[in-house]
Every structure is written in structure tokens, then in C-alpha cells.
Image (cartoon, rainbow, N blue to C red):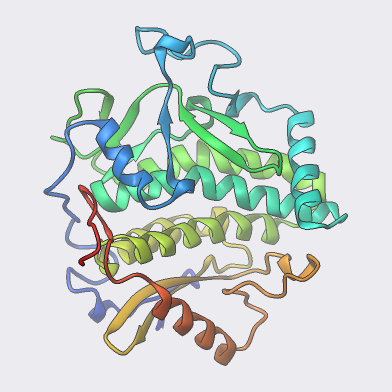
Length: 328
């Protein structure tokens, strides 16, 4: 591993065949679906927390002209309209679910669940298709379950940021040359960072813990995408490194967003994220330390990571066109 000026430890450049950091050769996605619906259907095959829907005009949540409806939609609460009471209820639900009465811990876990659920489908669409669905707060509606997690996430307008020349017949496509910049804008600037700021007083969260909570869920989602998809780990790592390097000031908990670790066990290899700050999960009864906890020793982490790498599926992975059925 090497250390960059910003303090983010990266995979050695020579292990990334397409070029050293910073990127000197663009990633390409030659095999992409023709529609947003097909794109999101592929993304959803990675897991239930990767499901991203588009509002149905027939149910009144989005009129036929494609513009979002005002106020509450049929698909849940508008993400940019969550009240303090909504946040308090969600935090209490998360705390009750895990059995903690510490507001600080419950607030962190609420932020974890929220950040992962919003970031995961966007990151998967980026890795698999080079497309950035608009997951800004103004464009999402959320339906929360009884334990304070976003159960359903719905785009109010089918809008996607994509490279020039990309097109989808059922979506507004905004051409951009900088996919990472678009991802940072819609996910962080226009959604998770304002939410993080609002949540901090609820649990008296220090800035490093709050920032690290956002970074960790982005890293965790990318690790899961690497485990469940057929995308080369080099693609996942390049996207992770560019996103996290460029957002050090925004989501680096203690000057380090985390480590994107390349793990190898026999012929298997993949990337796993280790967060740079504690997530406080050890304070939850019977939970212990998380798999990427910076409080654990290097040997403990390596043992956990090797076990996780060996547990990853080797068949039935999700490609840009969907999950390949396991061989008989």
C-alpha cells in the first residue's frame, strides 16, 4: 500500500493496469442497457439495498410531464422535506432496534443506514454502467420501515448523469465529462452532507465520527459491489479512489477517509474498505467490533478480511446485463 498526500492509503499504482493515480485513461462501459429501467433492474440484482425505483405517474407521485409533484408523494417522504420529528423518530427506531439508549450511537446507526441505502444504487450504476442516477435530496422520496431504515427509495424524476454520447429512452440524460464530479455533487453536496450537518446535534456527534460514518458506508457499498458483481476490482478501486480522494475535506473523519485494501487468498482477490474512524457499533449490546474497525489489530483485520474474501461467491455474479445464473 502507498500513502497519498491527502492521507488516503491506496492500492499500488502498478496493480491497476489502466494507469497510475491520478487517472490517465478513462474507464469505458461498452455494454449498457438502452433504458434507465433496465439499468436499475440490473443494479437491483446486487441486493435489496440496491433497489432504486422511479416514481409512477399513474399513482400521482409524478405527473405525465415528468416533473415531480409537490410535497408528499405516493412513494414516501421527500428526502428534502424530512422534519426534525421525522429524524427523531428514525433515530429512536434505530436505537430501539439494536437495543441501545445512547442517542449518539442511535444517530450514527441512522446515518449509516440512510447513507448506505441512498449511495448503494448510485454507486452500482456507476460501476456497472458508467451512469449516475440523480439521488439528490430534491429528487428522492423515502419510505422508512419500523426500524428506522429507508425501505424504499424512489427517484421523483428519471434523471441520470452520463458521459457524452450515452442515451436512454426513458430518462433525462445530463451529459457530463466528469462522472466523479457529478456523483459528488448529487450524493454528497446535495444530499448526505446537509443531512449529516442536521443530524449532528441529535446525537452530539463529533465531526470526525459524522464524516467517517458517511465515508464508511460509501466504502462498504463499493466493497459489496466488488463482491457481488463481475466488474473487475480495478474498476471498483479506481472509482473508490477517485471519489474518496476528491472528498477528503468533506468526509475524511480524521484526515483519512479509510483504506481501500486489496486482499488476496489463493487465486481470489478483491477490494475491501476499512474505515478511518470508529463507528461506535461496539457500544451496542452483543455487537462487538465491525469488520473494518480501526480499533482492531492488523492481524485481526486480515483474518476477518480473508474469511470474507473466501466467502464471496465465485459464480452467479452480476454483469452489466444482469446476474449470470450459477453453472450446474
